Length: 127
Length: 127
DNA sequence: CAGGATCCCAAGTGATACTG
DNA sequence: CAGTATCACTTGGGATCCTG
Image (cartoon, rainbow over all chains, first blue to last red; front, side, top):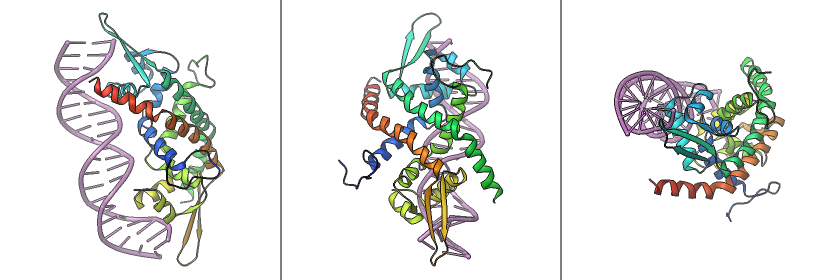
C-alpha cells in the first residue's frame, strides 16, 4: 500500500494510521463534538435540548458542530414541519460506531486524570 | 459521586466522562501530539529524529508538544551530557497505556474515512 | 544538536442582533 | 423554536533569529 517501512509489532501501517487519525481528530478534536456525540449516544435530542444539556455552548457553535457531524454522516437531522418547527438530532449507524472508541478514550481519561494532574504538579514544582 | 442522573445503559457517569474526555482531548487533540505518541510507540527517538519523521512540524511545536507530554507524565526526557548533547524521548508507562485507546481510534478512522468522504461529497452536492 | 525568544497571521470561538 | 449573519477577541501555530 505505502512505500514506508511498517512497524513489526503493530497491525497496519503506522503512517496511514497517523494520517487517518489526524483527519479524525481534526473533526472530533474540537471543543464540542465529543460532548454532542456523547449526549446523542444517550438518545435523540432536539436543538434546544442539546443547548441546555451542553453547558456553555453558544448557539453558533452548536449549529456549526451539528452541521459538521451531519456532513460527515455521523448525525442525522430530521425536521418536523410543525408550528413551531421541531428538529431532532440522532446518531447514524456510523455515529454509533464512533461511540465505541470514544468510550475507550473516556475510560482511559478517567483512569489517568489524577495521575496526569499529579505529574503536572510535580513538573511545575520542579521548575 | 456526582449529583447527576447517570445513563442506564452505559457504565460510569456520562457527565464525568464528558469532562474527563474533554480534558484529554485538550491535550491530545492538537495537531501533533498523537503523531509524536505514535512514533514513540515504535521506539525511543531523539529530537532531530522526531523532527525528521514528523513531516511539516516546526521546531517550536515539537519542543512545545514534547514539554506538554513530559509535564503530563506521558513522555520521559533523558539528557545524555555528551558533546554535542543527546536527548532521548520515550513513552512512560502511562504513555504506553494511551497507545491502546489511540489504536482503537485509528482503526475506526481507517475504517470510516471513505464513508465520511463520501458523505461529505453527497452533502456538498445536495447544497 | 537541542532548544529558547520573539513576532505575526490565520483559525476557532463567543457575543450580539436579526429572521422564517 | 431553530436557526443565520456579523463583529470582535483569543489562541494555535509557523517563521525567524539567537544560544549553550
